[in-house]
Length: 394
Image (cartoon, rainbow, N blue to C red; front, side, top):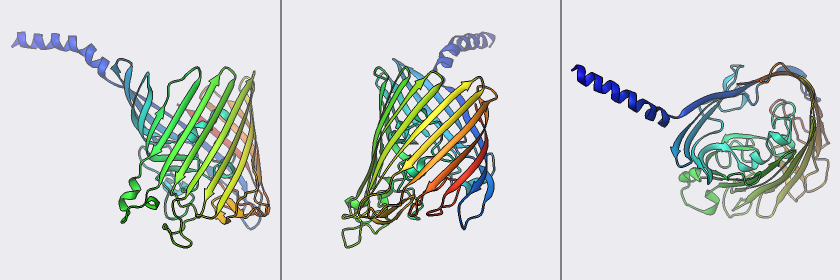
């Protein structure tokens, strides 16, 4: 008996290193952000003070080395709502509802499935701008027609804007990221057509799908990005699907972008240009063009200053009506806006900062833009916010 126990002990000691080498490593990471806003929503709306908790999350990621340069990995990322408001923020409140997936990576690149930011969204990532797409300083209302987090093809039937947004975290996707070729990386995303299982008579109009492409080049102080995304059969005007009068049949909505950034010592200058086009019916379209210019100045020590100027031009096309943040009036004008933002940040450590800033949204008479995920839509009215915040990463 003692000999058997001794043999097992020796075998366990010999196998332990091999077993340990086969185990995956797991990392816990995340960001906690909390803003307190003094908000002016414009005429006929209350001036309020309140909180916003955008871009707060906690995640778990792991990787196992399989040999030959090949690795298997997973990631589960969830909202970290320290305000305990649940779903009242409008965000999903479940496990793994942010960027989450499983994949294989190696010398060929990274191939993975899951719910993830599209290639188009990653091509205009935070390296090109110091501000989020949401919150008081958010740029998504003007450039991407709002946000869509953890959404399926076409969003939902309630018309809440998910079908319209080109700033998307898309569910049920196949994704590929290439290796870096001299600083040049290509990304691609394609959604499945899971929603079409409910279609009684299969047809082109019953199979919505997303295609997304993005590329980023980074070398020294220079960064460039470009992207294209297509939404097939997303039905942006919420019309009945079909080929009859007043129905939406086989429509295609798309967007393309070019982005750039250059760092001059302690100052980074960034710019984004986006064009979106919605095929609202077989004979009508709505086009929106917008751009933004941004500065991120690491002044000295813990002090930073962030600046932003984002513009949505007047819409064009022959569509008349509202599509989320965009107003179509057959090119009559007065549908544009600009957002000016300034923020001072003080770093308490490498991972924690406090900040204070001011954002002012100037809407033209027919404009529907809004301080993203903060204010109520108030067409034709200017909006502003004084915002104090804290952010911690781990």
